[in-house]
Image 1 (cartoon, one colour):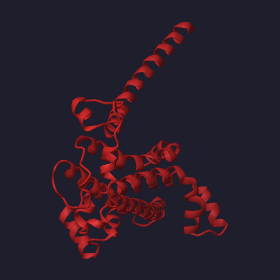
Image 2 (image 1 turned 90 degrees about the vertical axis):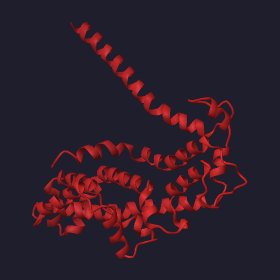
Image 3 (image 1 turned 90 degrees about the horizontal axis):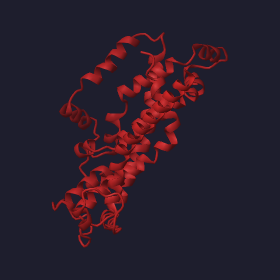
Image 4 (image 1 turned 45 degrees about the vertical axis):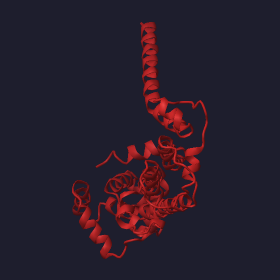
Length: 291
């Protein structure tokens, strides 16, 4: 009987590993195709529909993208907005989440209802634009940060995580003379690193992928983040004019430019994942246990 179970267990492990391998390949192969396509020639890209290893390696696509300093300016804008936006969002989200996690807070249920309500209904594009305009944020980097400061979804996850922290720790801190801010920054936040890492990653990805907000609120092309500029490069590579920021002496390599744009837009934020991987699953799961 034991041998049958062992055989069944081995068979299950084999099927499980085979299935996970297939799913992994389905997930990874398209990205490998994009990376390989960005380093191939336009002629090979036109002949082959799927490329994993280029026959002839070419850097024409990246030469075209980095043919001007504009790309580095846009990259610095995206990095700055991502760093400052993530820090500001985490600070405000932590303050609000901690307050809502306190059971002695008056009106806690009403505030949570309003938070959840914003997940179902939003003001819309035009009212949001009018609010940003009245705040004087048009053509300002703050217009990319302030409207997206707090995400209701991230707030709920962090609030639920804070509620899982034993109340005895807070009571002990109060006996030692800590106020609410001392409890938050000395007790709660150090114990909440999984949640902080997870929510920080969510915010960082959101700010890095800023596109529509930049299109709506930024009038000057010099303030464009990387996502908007890369979109304009794709438009230029497709044969449409959008300005003279790029060097016209460098011919656009058509399809390969689109592959290179995806790599340039994805790799920087993708490099953050390995540093937060050990916190990611734990933070997302623990923060979703309690309601």
